[in-house]
Length: 148
Image 1 (cartoon, rainbow, N blue to C red):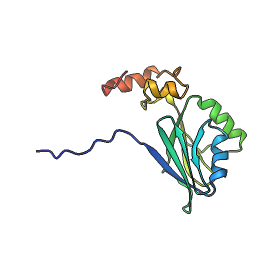
Image 2 (image 1 turned 90 degrees about the vertical axis):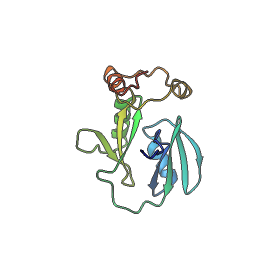
Image 3 (image 1 turned 135 degrees about the vertical axis):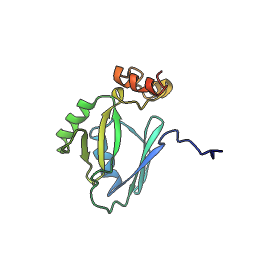
Image 4 (image 1 turned 120 degrees about the vertical axis):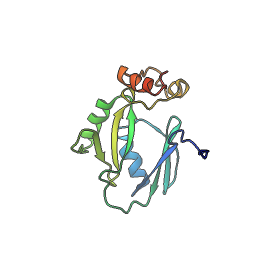
């Protein structure tokens, strides 16, 4: 008999350590349009629809190499243009990665080209109901029995 285990449904949030909350909000707002749910001197909660990033002070480790998190955006070329205008250097490699000022490695990806999906209601609430998955992303979802 197989023991029943809880099944992961998704990632609710990521916690990022930064040196200064206001500076982090200014940096991420340089290329992302978001609202801050709550903010103090030691923490900020930034929602992307039904998920969030918890920014908190206390970063002490060296810059991340392989460890990273990905942010899916609606317009990746625009985000890249804004990052470059901010003086951010994109890292070498096959993906669009960069380090934030505290050494957190971030990968940008395009929402329409990946399997990760928001419900129609969440997209509508975010003002992004115009986004449609690419044929390739739909094929990947279909192979798993998850196509809309």
